[in-house]
Image (cartoon, rainbow, N blue to C red):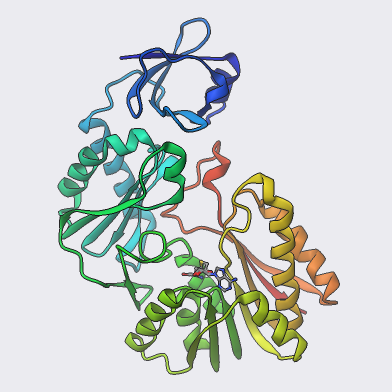
Length: 386
Ligand code: SAH
């Protein structure tokens, strides 16, 4: 195995339980080529374990194991089987869920989502990408899926000098795969839809939101209608908006499949919609805010916080007394504390007194690793105007 020597700082970082080593902490990587598994050694030559090497990313190494071992089919089969077994204990009432959550399942840069009989994978670094077919063969052995899709059109692949491409590795994929989540039918476009089809990480929060939702509800950033369709049974009406026509077409298909007559989808920019309704002094009893990650990096954190604050301010202005605000952030750079603080500021500006009903996170099939803060990316607060 090729050896890569890293700095003391990198060795300390590995010792603190974080799997990433940055290029500035690589001392020598002679002979290492893109995507291979390498033996990582500290400045004194002691082995730290084995990692995938990337020749282009700022993250040069992603640790795979603290032991030096072959990264072969048996390795992937064991890790994926362990991830699958964990899902059996934490996933319920759905045939769509995340089977492998990258670092959260000790498989950095690998995402695998299951949609009923179909499997969608993303290999997001050079190492996982070169192991793509081996991983697909493990998935075939464990799940015998009708098809496996490699949904490798994610922008993060640019940093790895990997092409953005989507391919069907085995089987055939229908234009829309029907899944059932919490008793509600959703259609997922595995080849062209957002992410790997639909958002799976809010599944538990849909149920939580539905527990408090009432009256006239507004679901901004609805995508395929996850919150809106879950809240429909508890509300008089649900208005749901998104800027993406493709997402709304799926949302409408989902609405019809679930006979949700009181839900209306419309194409709109959420900032404009919220500002317009606030100016008209419209009132709602429930508002959901689930925007895309405004803070893609630490650099635009300030702008992101302003964006989150603005939509939360508007939403609070729209809420009547007793009203429910479900507000989310999927930027891992925005901590839960930061989200609580900016919503608190928004509540003061809106002259509303707000109680925290629940502080939630991503569904349990997106495991959080205690020593890897990046794995805790989704925050979801359920609040009530007093
Ligand atoms: N709540 C959804 C996920 C939302 S993801 C679910 O549970 O499935 C964020 C969504 O915001 C995407 O569907 C994207 O199309 C939409 N979006 C992005 N910018 C927007 C804007 N300015 N106004 C409205 N929608 C927007």
